[in-house]
Image 1 (cartoon, rainbow over the protein chains, first blue to last red):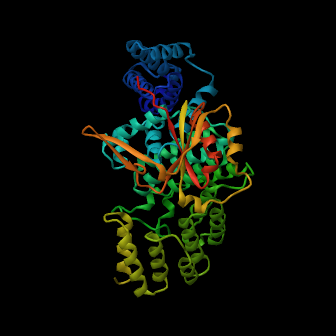
Image 2: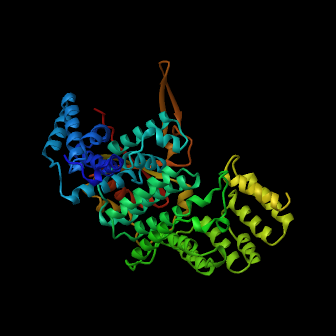
Image 3: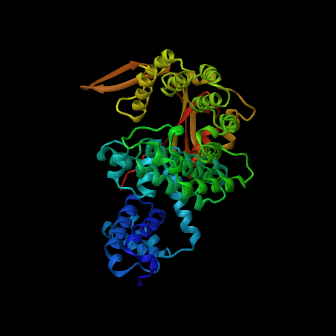
Length: 405
Length: 112
């Protein structure tokens, strides 16, 4: 064991985090036992965190962690004394400690695709991915999703049980399923990101960014995965300006653009260019990233390229028809042409009953046109649909005061 | 893995189904799943169903199915598949996947 430059105490948690998920993934493949895999890896991670600060980080941290985790797995399996445990024991003993890089990263992909299998409920896919791939604790996940720890543990338990009982395969999907299943994985990652972005839970957004980066490393030629990475980077770059010191939402046109993270924006744009190399027509994530790029690279709100944005929304509506996307397109038309045109577009929308952002958008255009009385009514309608105590609600209340309500 | 596939008739979905050239007839589907399908059959409508239970030593027999639902089980197939993905692929090719639905239930396996 040697202590080199990279082995300072501060880097240990990130070294461990990078190895942890792969190790869990490999042990699941070898034993088919999710709980055993997580327990053993947790054990080896704790040992590493206790010892490495004194002994230094080993030359091959992954191999060190693997050896400790496997030793623990063998101990536990020997104590069980069942037929299945004997088979699992043999599988562990026969597998090489340090495999060629490919099978190891395949394990991680297997784990990700299995956690995000469509036969699992979406909220369970999210929870299992955060627990097993991201390595968050049950307490952390429960807190982030505002459920009790007991509820979350139960949910994780049922989900792992369903994987075993229903015969959900532990593998990277075959070619004919790959695109569809990858889009399922991207959906889970983006949902995690938005949970963090919308409620200022930085921790979750940071995990989503890390997981998306990981997926792109594992699937470098998937242009939609890279599109999502670009999208996440371009949005994350604006994080620090989205809320003011009082925790209130700052609309994009009022955000201090000098505080946007320029390096992150550049990285996002770079990934977007690389995704374009595939020459495939862009999917929903690439298109959303291109829209985010229009905003992130405009020097000020007035120079936002609304014409281009409307065109991108048109493409997005073809790729993924949704009333919410239609609403955002209508808003963009209002900024491209005129607020009156925006109001006409909004009036023509369908399928948004009970969605607060529709009357809020109408209120905004009416406010800009100086039609204060109608704006008050629209904001009032939006407020009736927005939950108490949210930043969205406080923004609407501010707007209502601005139009004399 | 062994799965029970319930073939579910759903009048609401049937009204919305859009036929296409790739749709299989039941005979074509049966030919496709040969070797994977152990057995299966169609069932009489729920009008012919009888529900039986025993309470306080008495056999209670009622007319009709045990659930009040617009959807009803119209048939079943028992499949032997590699994994759930294979069962999903087979189910998605079944003629009732459009205009009805399929429910895949793994056979019960005891936990260790």
